[in-house]
Image (cartoon, rainbow, N blue to C red; front, side, top):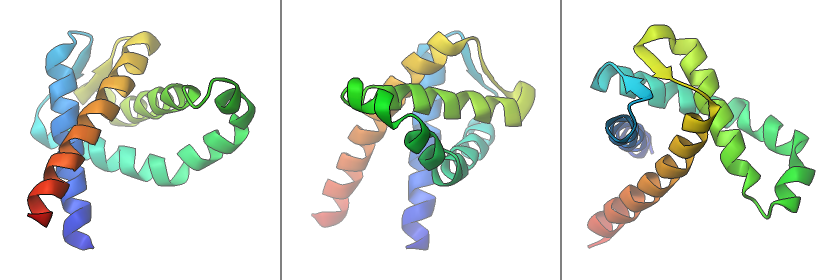
Length: 119
């Protein structure tokens, strides 16, 4: 269980670095910063995200779940606010696009790791 959590944090950090390479308006200072951002995102996903989902449930239903990307973008913006100058996202549009790309990258990474561990 502990090893799975560490692996998940590392995969999220890698995904954040990939997104930082794709967008000039998404900046991380390095892998340590990405790891810390992944940890803060994990905490926010456990504490804040369920509250946001409940509060915005009507919008989520109306958009057939697409509003969850807005919630993910908000958690990215909160993470940026907590971390300060070592993690910078220039605008909500970038955060929204990054949330979509992060979801896709995490899906692919989780599938590859799952397939590797089960073989």
